Image (cartoon, rainbow, N blue to C red; front, side, top):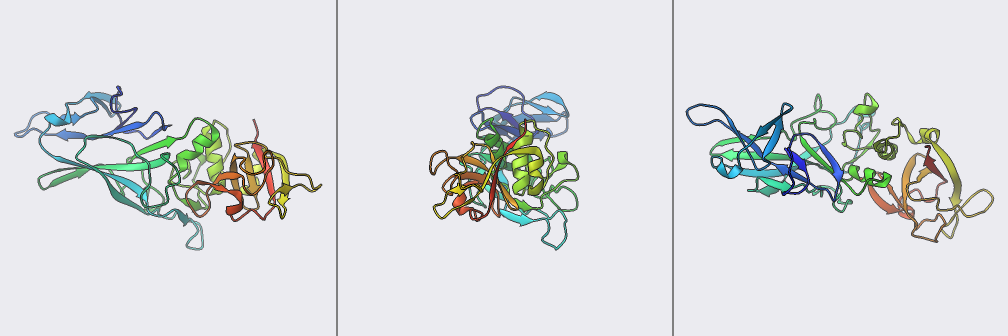
Length: 320
């Protein structure tokens, strides 16, 4: 169970995935159903106060009043930052490898922490994490869904039954993109529909699906497409190639402007989003920073270190 806000927040906790700003926070709660010895009505215990089960609110008793048991929390996180749906030579939804890593012991409620431990942590406290809570009483162990809760035939990611929390930087386009931090780069990420796309499920994405995810979170009706199709949904602001001085210039030799934070920077078969004008002010150059995912979970990186700096670029802006 989880609820938006800190430990002192009020309201009903439920099992739905949470996507909120990092400053809002999310609290995770253990909720345990106990059958009295000798029979009788089952009772729910949780420090959430009120939880929602089957769409109905249920009042709980404090964990301290429950029969003695131990509580253990784990993060359910991907073990790889780079994978491919075409690893077998043809497309299929490859299984994302997840592992349970010990997180908190002995607490009935905890503030969600989305820092990955098995892959690089690029998010500084933002991104997506999944959780499992395990309760032990004597030789009996019960747990919420974890790594075994697969989305059909062991392929792809985990079902929505696994508790999930996404903390974003803010409510801007770049902020929504940070919800994808901590998830793997998936070459040829896909879905049977846009609504069931791996990006929508926060399982991971390739570079094009990553930038589309943020636009869709902003309410834009853009389908998940490959990089070559992105110009259909955006207007071109500028284009050029890099010179020996690290500055991009257009076909007339004029400097390409740094058009704005949040604009797309499109390379041949790759794309990122401009996040900071760090080089020559007002000019696009290799010292400027972009957010992208490429053989690694999403991160901000200097253009010159992306592996694409020497290729031609187009600067695009999503259409209204």
